Image (cartoon, rainbow, N blue to C red; front, top):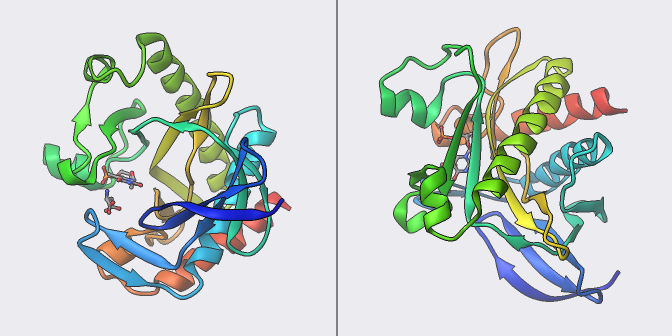
Length: 238
Ligand code: TMP
Ligand code: ASP
């Protein structure tokens, strides 16, 4: 399917129209950004690595009964995806305490709670992606209570599938962020990406961080680590 004009440029991705009104091409850039675009860098080959990783993960979710916007990977940095009406919400699931939750509540990183923790955040860089609850989401007109219940249900299924997948790759899925969109028929489907930019991944044997915290916290070897995640996932999924 032919790629047409650029529709949108985000921090790490580009979205192009196609000949079909139901499909877009999403291209992953080499840019890394953190702290709401304050910290920026280009990481060689990041676009390809993230495209590969997100394609593997979304393909795995599709194959396991979770509807996503992903149709197929078309080349090194591009994915053919379904057009969705994007919801400006970030859904974060936490299996291990880390990052903003550790900081905000004064808890040590690495503590494993008995339950899975779900955060909802408004996707708005200028406001710093503020934490919201179900009632805020309904009041803002972003979703109904029924849709929020569906979002929690799908997110829990995604978590179960991904914990199992990463476990086979020798990685603990500490936390991750997903986004949703409404497909043409109104159904809620998973949209956006799942990559080391949007997950916290800790090596099961060494505890080493294998995600964007390497960039955020200047831990070095970002490119090598993203490549290692891609290689391990491809070994598990082949
Ligand atoms: P946090 O600890 O900063 O709240 O992040 C939790 C997880 O969500 C972590 O894996 C990174 C991911 N995340 C994003 O991908 N984008 C975001 O804008 C935020 C706030 C978190
Ligand atoms: N919302 C932050 C950003 O867009 C999350 C992060 O630091 O990754 O940069």
